[in-house]
Amino acid sequence: MDTATYVQLAANEHRWAVLAAFIGGLIVAGALVWAVRVGMRYMDREEPRPRPEDQPKLPEGGAVHEVREMREPDEIPRMDKTGSRLMPYELHHAATRTGKDQTRKRWLPGSSGAFGSGGPGHV
Image 1 (tube, rainbow, N blue to C red):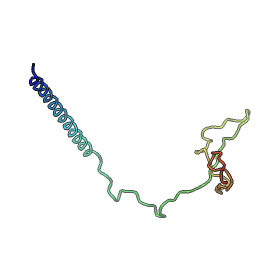
Image 2 (cartoon, rainbow, N blue to C red):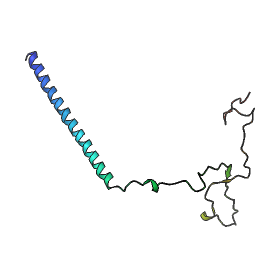
Image 3 (tube, rainbow, N blue to C red):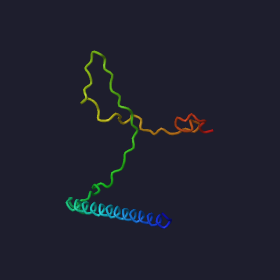
Image 4 (cartoon, rainbow, N blue to C red):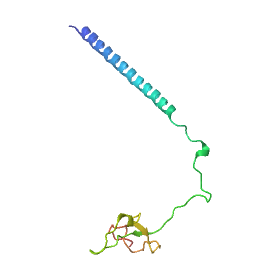
């Protein structure tokens, strides 16, 4: 076999690879078109979007603002062995309660640098 035969065989194999890639691309494009059409049919069956008058509105008193408060743990009372046990309905809905002292804890100069870092702090 001479060099021309090898070139023709290589070109022949190259044509099949290009044809296979083209067919694969058509399959992928067809799958994407099918998926879009299925999605459009699915969206057509959904309920209509809410109208502007169905949207939520601000309350009469205006916007609601956040409340900032200091919380403290709501401890479960200790029971002695002779007392009755605490039932689930006697527990509170949260593990914390509003603290008695509502003043904010402020950073004092000369105290630690970062919280719990143990660094030299303000020098």
